[in-house]
Image (cartoon, rainbow, N blue to C red; front, side):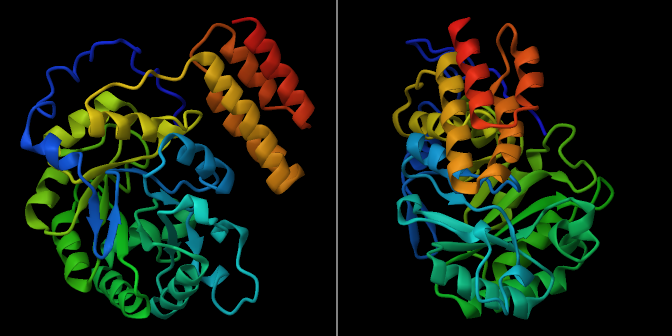
Length: 354
């Protein structure tokens, strides 16, 4: 996964390319400052936090929510088999009322399992149910889930129809542009998902073969937007306010979804949202603010998950520790922490040396 990208400078005037962006004084700017309508659900932000496996747990989402009070959040993706025929739902599905609007993302290749999982997701408080049809990981695709559904559109349609019939909340889909450069099928696939009842589609503008490498091919999002009437959300390389603005201006998408740009930087969704609503650039988080956030993240993960939280915190701490002198050494040390005290001591020392 990518690490933190340097934020835009906190200038009083809007820097390039934001100042000259067609978003600044266009009908597109006016539209993007209004709420996003996902079927029956009104969301007062057009910037969404992507579901990220091993990342977007309750602790991380609370941090994002602090800086983006109106954005849609997503749980980590949940396998439908973990939900059906069990008495206790997986911790991945735990949400709280303060997180709303919140979506629970599900994956599987069996329409009946996904329908039942969706019903239980809504009972837990999900405002929408999102179906993952884009994950490129082999262990997911080999079982017919994730991006493998791009090669099986009939099953994908059956999944969406079954889930739409099972729940009263909007059903959405997150997918990619195709299997590889020789098999880009997103235009037909997206129209099938809309016809099956999906009320929003998020397009990660990479193929399954690309994984998370290479540049996102935003031109395909433009083409998807031209053939659909439901909202189209752009995903891929949205790692700064400038990138979000450029993508929205280029594609005409109805919003953006932030993914790896939020690793070690849970401020990003809020920064983009603030700019779209006000045209003013929120000051980027300082190094100290990032490291203070890392301390809070570490303590909260331990409080929520115990020793397993410490293990999971190591990668988060490494993502926070970048972009300043001594960051590389700090990352190496944070990846080895055994206790909360170890991490706090290292972070406090780094802050003192700023």
